[in-house]
Image 1 (cartoon, rainbow, N blue to C red):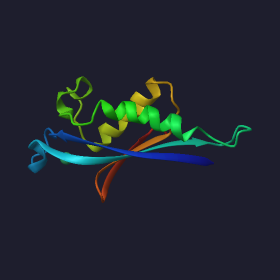
Image 2 (cartoon, rainbow, N blue to C red):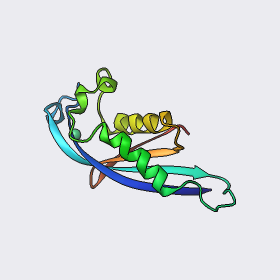
Image 3 (tube, rainbow, N blue to C red):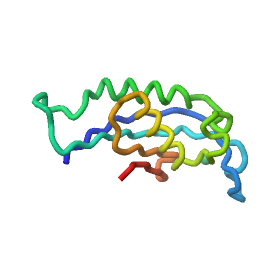
Image 4 (tube, helix red, strand yellow):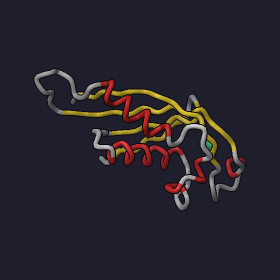
Length: 119
Ligand SMILES: [Zn+2]
């Protein structure tokens, strides 16, 4: 299996609902995002996907989150804006743009991350 990954980041605020702790208060993170595409085989070019194309799509999706209060976005009106659900939002948004994606990982801090994939 081949796997390619691009990395990017965004800064945003969120408030975790029904958490019962400090994270219920509005606070911010510098989120780091890893977007991966897996493929069992390679085309003649030897590339699963062009890194530049992948970074462009990821950049467009992260623009919808950057410097935002995530709770106020339509998608997160009824969905708790945890790192898990942010990973799913990015995954679905990338796919909606017609780009390949196998897994999205969102780091909320240097040592805490959540991933979403459909496998
Ligand atoms: Zn947080």
